[in-house]
Image 1 (cartoon, each protein chain N blue to C red):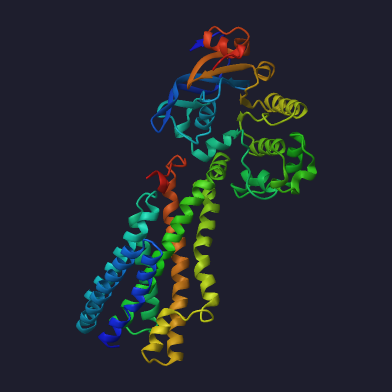
Image 2 (image 1 turned 180 degrees about the vertical axis):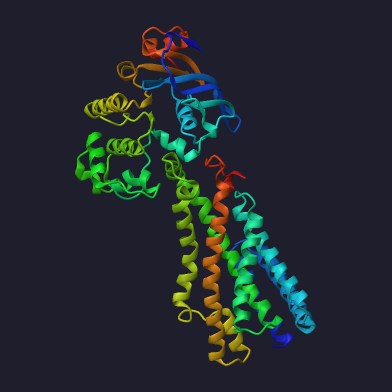
Length: 255
Length: 247
């Protein structure tokens, strides 16, 4: 794609800007900022990736992945601010999921150990794990509030915190996994996944693109399940004290 | 605090200078008193007096900010929480239920210990609280408020607690059901020497069911002693409350 064609693609930014202006939607500023940010961020990433790919150094790969995990943690922790030590719990979850997936991929030689594979796949894994964390934390903090009485009832009858929180925890894990599973059911029928579309546009063999996309889909299933389960089991003990009493948690509105 | 009558006998539960506050609000203020073993102690006082909070402290759902609570002479902070909660059972006014059948709710105290509640035992409990055995497979969602309260009492009994805390458990029951429950509690108290603490808004009920009473107001224990305290209170605030003009 030439820079002229890329320049022309800005027409697709102009359309929403004009619509926003005409209909007084007030989205002009945000659209403008989003456009500028995406241009700067993506071009910067493009150059960084070129540098990392050419250097062939694992140190840079690790740095890139660490950066992704840092950004993902920063984004997701807002939703779990009421849970003590959420930052470390998120970092631990992201690192675990990254090590797990890359060990399988590289260990069984499913993908080659090069930056071209490790970095984009890590991006998808960590990104997906971040979205799952946000979905899980959102649901879990809400479930704790709505099922507070039931949780306390189970404690009052002599249940342990794990038994008392079981239902809200399982509901939240299930609820956060549903979008991943549901979207995989219709994938390819309604829309072609972004990565696959990109490969096809870039001239790759569609079957080859499909194979890679399937790999990513399966990877994301593991990511989704492991993320919410791990985060759930790391989070629930912080809701109770050593006397097995429920601690008050601040809801987002109260903060 | 004034004690109109000397309470005799051993204490099942003893509170020493217990205070509790939540979000800067003092809910229980320096309360000292006890529940005599094997007796029925009623808790009376206006709403917001801290009666339910005392129950939550005794069941270990919360801990005092100051002071200590002893269960049969042992500081409850040193008792393993699940053991404490099985020994000091609580049935709350709102009778919170878990979704599912009546049996599932009744069996919950056993399920939490990885045990099973025999069907016959469950049916026996239902009959004891005045419900038909056929209720066992009914869905909780189909039960009235009064029926839920009865299931809640039966569920608390499954753990065979030594101390039973009852928070307004007859508030949504009709006269006949209330009388049934009163008889049941008296039976449990006499037959199994279970110490009972019973919060009630009904002074008549406090008079005829209780051996002892605590009168609480604004987080303080104002008077305690034999139930006769209610007939002839020394404190003017309690006199006002009993006359029904307490605001």
